[in-house]
Length: 327
Length: 132
Image 1 (cartoon, helix red, strand yellow):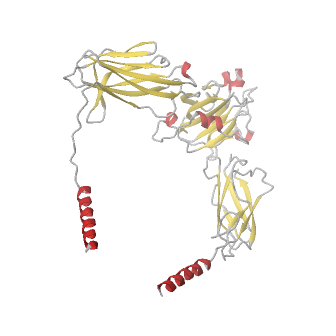
Image 2 (tube, rainbow over the protein chains, first blue to last red):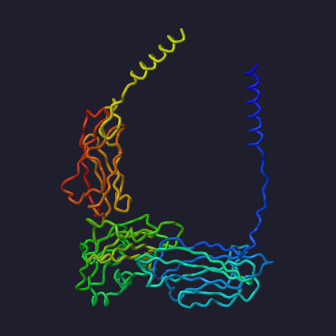
Image 3 (tube, chains in turn purple, blue):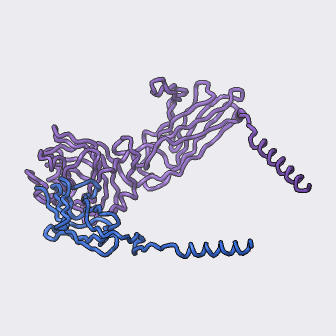
């Protein structure tokens, strides 16, 4: 009898647990805060490089009964370079996917580390974009940002972002090399030169772009010291002697260099740790989207040169590069 | 009676566990099997960009124990990654742990294929030629 009672009790308990567990909780509409609120997203991906831009979207809102937005401001720990601004427009997306901006104030005013937009239209909720042009002073350092918004009822709110590490590397985009004319590439200057400049500045020339019709050669990047077999029908300007180390790569489609969909980024650490032991001084038959890791003859620079495009008809190669000073 | 049956069950369990066959393994933790087959079934050669550098499919001769590979003009012969495909359970000696220097074309590189039972060993020469 005692056992039966006990069993009934256990069953009852289990049944109650089951009912409770299955109770469907109804959705509760959250009660909005009546305070000034803000939020932030960083829109830029990848390593932050001097000369480049870090983009944020900063949003602030207050319920209309409490007031309206008066201004938004950003303070960077290191003043941005020329070109730093807080967009005075708030954007919506049109049906075709295009951004449609509407100005809520005059263009931003930057004073030292501070950038501000004061609104001249009533707004309860706005998202402004902030573009921080990375200055030379920030190289190798970290930068932080303090975003703030003010409301007409006197409330202020801030949002701290960072720290973000600014890389030591440099980047140059879309250098066009043309066979037989501007075919001398300088990693030190991150530029392409002609034979006259190359002859006058032999120390600066690290790579030579050549195009030759045989299908086993086509578009090639070779060092001035490369074997004659890799410099067919080419007259080398006197005194060019840099034995640049070159390592071919194929799947390193750096997003900042290629500006394609691949989420691959060459960072400082990739450049500083790249092994150039036994590397050759030539890279024959390069294709678009391929690249070469390069170490200059004096060991001062390690670089990654990405091939954006090659055009056999005009004998051109467009390259973009990232370069790190090693010593 | 119950106790006797339980004891017998435990004993039986011990017998089963103790009779479990241990498969022999080599130093790399790979099973040593009964297979005596010993050959290279295919071969590939990759450059520093991990793309194939061969002009055509490498010719594997299991009788002469050679692999003839023609590589593209301009191939960096000092930094190549050979890839062997072997018969089931066989292993390669020495192991390939990184890039290999093929630049001395007069001295073909050699690898030994060891059968699954680790009793048959056949040494293959990898002979490179560069397409002019």
